[in-house]
Image 1 (tube, one colour):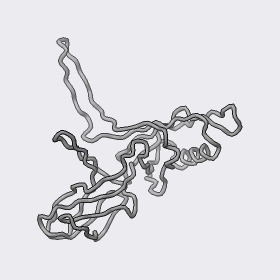
Image 2 (spheres, helix red, strand yellow):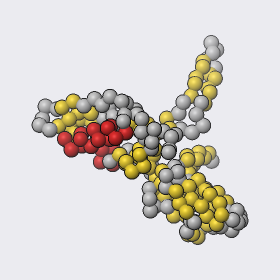
Image 3 (cartoon, helix red, strand yellow):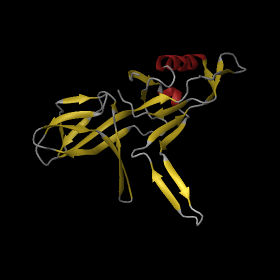
Image 4 (cartoon, one colour):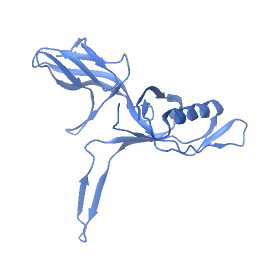
Length: 202
């Protein structure tokens, strides 16, 4: 199926939702109480729950449009994570200059207590990318906002960093849309609107 690059889940519909990173870990406990943990995913996937009471008719019609256009779980689209406010990368380390034209993948780095985790960023928000070489702003030769890469010709050994805002590639986690009309006129209840990050970005 196709990634719907121009379809962005409306921010106002996501406010009040919940979400965060999802991992897949198999856990086996032996009779002595020791655990064997098998990490099945190298990178996490975000998931979001956006179920609300008292939605308006206009908001519900927007949700219906998303469900029809995405064809349920079939076609992914963009989502700005206003749920956790995690949609910004600032001076993220993306590589080192090679002295010739090279391609760099944007990442969002999480650091704490000496540990780091690099989250690949694929869906840049157009017009937000700022690239630096050796802490000096430079202009990329090209930018691909659909896969989170840019090309740059910079001096060999220079640290290359990127600042940006990004969308999360998500899909609906349901095919059947369950909407209930409320007791008040033109109010609706959404018991469960789930979004899950997808690794399919094209």
